[in-house]
Length: 479
Image (cartoon, rainbow, N blue to C red):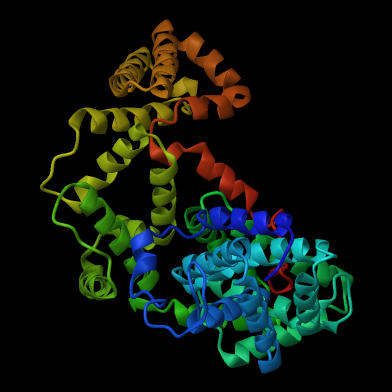
């Protein structure tokens, strides 16, 4: 498709941007090369084949959500035949085909987020190419396929409805049945008659776009979903008078039925999250590799269901929280430093491989850290001089572990823990003064003392960003 250099450059830049969403090796893309036995329709480097024409056309139809007619498909075919007369145009069109191949390797969920991000960017670029008839033809085809179905600012289109429904299904992890799809479609048509509801629904759609552009792609998205979903469901359950909300609650409950009863029921989501965490940690230990395949998840679900009643309340609670714990751990493993990963291994390997001893020094330091952080919140009237000396020893132990790990961040933390030990040894008056300053210094101190993965401020900040109250709320979850 002929186009200006600016559009070509933007298309190539998008190929690089897509790597933030979908990461695949060249080998994965080279499997069963479709070019090998295709009918050639134009010579070039590489030759243009029938499957390339089909793939190029289908990709544009998917990306811009245009149900191309046969006549429109023939138009694109003619454009490609024209392009294959010029090496630069061939190179530019191959960018699109490579982009299509990369995106096709992703999951349905990831592809939806990629499209949500790329479509407005590329459409903006196309609209700017006023002197390019091919670009303007595609823009006209897009506008024709996205006619408003309800007036408003912005007007509602079927594409917006589709994105809203898909995002709702992903966020709540529910199947979108035809009745539920029809209900949400009707709800949006009604919402577009009310500016306040329209604004709320647009915030929800913009949240999807925000997620599509997260720096760490699925790592960030799955973590935010794991934190947001319970709060969303809580708010929706309370909205008893809203039939749209209650239909989503019913769909959520149906998709999250317990697989083992108890004071804390076991869900398949919790079982699957534990399976993924277990396999990940097991593989990090150097033991024989295990993939969290559907069959392996089925085995774990059966075993957990069979033994659920035998687990202690604390064990049941920990397992039931796996849908939140696993995405947080996965994100920190990816973003953290070596010391963070070592802390994660020390915390979880004993649960995964009970026969494999954890690092005793690290385990002791983590326990000392927990004791110290609990001690500093105690009422000074209940603290003895002996208690202060024991707390000082805990701070010493954590400081030694920080120096042992040796990173620049750990050495800075060690100095903070040394100061805490000094204050504890200085006596009760110094301890009281420390507590008096604690409220003002709490945020900085917590960051400085973040030697355990449970204290990572990044995760806390992400959750604060999406507390529902300040976060975008769709109409069916407004309180």
